[in-house]
Amino acid sequence: MNIITAIIISFAISFALTAVLGYVLIPMLHKLKFGQNILTDIGPKWHAKKQGTPTMGGIMFIIGIIFATVVTMLICVGAKTEIFSTVTELKNQQLTRLVTGLLMALGFALVGFADDYIKVVKKRNLGLTEIQKTIPQVLIIGGYLASLAVSKSTAMFIPFYGKVALDSVPGMIFFFLFGTCVIYGCINAVNFTDGIDGLCGGVTIPVGVAFAVMAIIMSSTSVGILGAALAGGCAGYFIWNHYPAKVMMGDTGSMFLGGLVVALAYAVECPIILLPVGIVYVIEALSDVIQIGSIKIRHKKVFKMAPIHHHFEMCGWNEKKIVAIFTLVSVIGCAVGVIIMNYTVKM
Image (tube, rainbow, N blue to C red; front, side, top):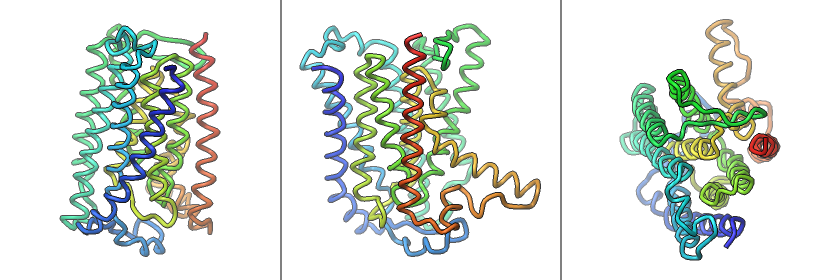
């Protein structure tokens, strides 16, 4: 079995399981009355019609992605896939990055679950406070980065330059400071992107595909399997989440996706690649920062509403159009990221 076959199997399993889980989980969420509470003071007033739509739907793709990853890796080992034939990859730094990255993503999902639970079950509209979210997030980030440092997995690819070792004291300081900023920024940027039906899942499908392609370039079956599982899980979820959404991923899902995306970036040893690959996430987060900064400094808004997908809603774009255009932007960014990565790895 070659890497492309493994990628196809992982995508198919993740897609099918996530899609099928919708038939089980959505009625269960309805029964438990885990409905979304829409805050019209921080979003368009017409979103009020989404009130009661089941949330925490991210559990669907979390199960699908993890199951597909584990099963496909076991299939590869059983089939004696060349890269797994001596179980070399199961011991190397790349798999360490993936396993710890998955654990990191699950940690973020638990923080998101706590936030969703408080909003939905405890009826506290704002969920966890910023400090209550930030403290566990920073602890999870620190644990992940420490695991990479202990396993000597701190080297990074710098686009158009090559691989740089960060094993010196200044290098390690940079590794932890830079990593904390990148990971914290990514998980929250992905969270911002989950604002309208189908948007976060839609723009993340090409992100998963991009990392799978990078895995082919780097001959890394494990990265390809996880990237394909991410794309498949988001595609299976999109069936239920496209406009009009039958379920929402909640912070449970968006924080897991943010963690997994950044874990894949570290798995290919190039977190900087998130700038083009995660271009939509970057734009969403920047629009929110710019809006808040402008209001505080100039007492004026730059956008009609932030994050930027709400600005386009206020301009009259419907949700389907926004998802289509933002997904196209994501595809272009991902293509650019793959080209940059291909050039950098082969330098």
